[in-house]
Amino acid sequence: MSPSRRAARSLVPALFSALLLLGLFASAAGAEGCATLYRGSKALGPVAILEGAGGPFVSLTDVGALLGFTSAPLGEELHLSQGNVKIRLVRDAVAAWYNLYLVPMYGAPFERDGRWWLDIPSVQALFQNFTGRGDRDRLRFDLGGGQTPAPAVAAPTPAPTPAPMPMPTPAPTPASKEGPRLETLLPGSGRQPASQEPHGTALRLRWSTTRERVRAVIDCVDGATPEIRLAAGTVEVVFAEAQDPFDGLASPYANVTTSLRRDPKGAVFTFSSQSRRVEKLVLDNPRRIVFDFFFGSPSEIRPAAAPQAPALPQPGLPKPKKGPAPKGRLLVVLDPGHGGKDPGAVANGVKEKAINLAVGLEMEKILKAQGVDVIMTRRTDVYLKLQERTDIANRADADMFVSIHANALPPGKNSSGFEIYIMALPTDKDALELAKIENREYVEGKTAGQAVDRKTEMLLKILGDMQQNNKINESTAAAEALFRAGKSHGLPMKRVAQAPFFVLRGAGMPAVLLETGFLTNAREAKLLAHSGYQRRIAEAMSAGVLDYLR
Image (cartoon, rainbow, N blue to C red; front, side, top):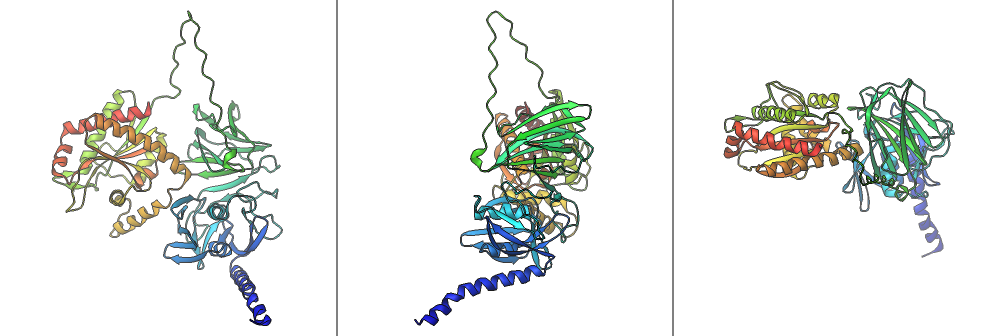
């Protein structure tokens, strides 16, 4: 090959790269602005940005192209692929598929002007799985205009105070309605959030960890707006008041310690840590104030030292009396499914709504006799929307939510047995189909079936949220306790399974859905209609509730 030919050939890759960058610059110019994507210290190229109430947002196609991904919009989904890596985003969903795994995100992607957009923290969380998490691979965005690049998932470069970054609620435009609000806090940097009078009551504190992050979640009453104070190594969160006694205050992680003091100005929670970055996220329905403490690597996060065992009583001295339980009376919300204009399943002359109510009322009697407070979502044959049912439980700050149903199958199929479901990815196709059936009351009208099936499918996409995962663990333990109690009482227990039920999604406490039997099975329908068998179910499930809560 001649030298001139070789030289011409060697120019092809460079020309291709130049054309790609030119295309991206032209693409970015069509949006409201342009940012530069960095991988570590290396500038990869421009991406289009869009300002909005939850922004800035960046073009997913631009980011993917700079990282070597090809993109393909398919209806409500955007598919990104590079070799064996497949990323699938769904419009209006706050989790995305990374190969076979769900990745939780702060906001949801949306389409506008023929583009797919996503907030910067979510883009970093998603693509950092591909690029890696070392300092040389961390993704960041230089928004231009002399601004420091948007912070990556490590220690941020000191910069002027970023504006609070509310995350977008999925919609055709990013500012359609308020959604979760994310704010990066930098203790010790001299930057303070806007001061505000503390308002509302803190109810409890919950903990979890994922990779290099420790998460602290303060459950609080709706509308609570605590004051945030920052100092070197500490974040103070001030509420008007805090529940007494307060559950979950002690941190299970040595890297983040907590304390609570009560003074005339309110209840002051102090989080102390040497984390590289702290992020605050506000979530609603129910209200939660979330703090994420980011460290350099998962190996930095250490469990807290186990508390010292109490000293053994000396011989001859009286044993100390056992004190009262740290919590007050237990509260359970029982939710007899369907009702009123919605009969539920109807087969073999039996209506599901009547069975559900009868079992629920029996459980109420038994639990109250055991000293448990009970709230019924309905005591008569009335119709309630699914959201109204979990709203009752959340307003009451219940310890457990139990939704009572009976099962059914299409013609030509037959099954029997007692099933217990939790809100999670479906165990199998049958579980998904059952969820679609139970969710049908969520949408009314001629196209209700198709609409709710789409909503059920969409619900699958949001189960990567961290708080949902914590609730899944608690609900699984509750479901297993009820399953054991059912077996010990001689009920035909079939399985504990998972499915995306709307009625469980909104509950802010451990929640289970009971399918007490199949009305389409003639023998089981006859049993379920019998008051003695309804009492037996109530006794078994009440025993399971007590076993879990106590």
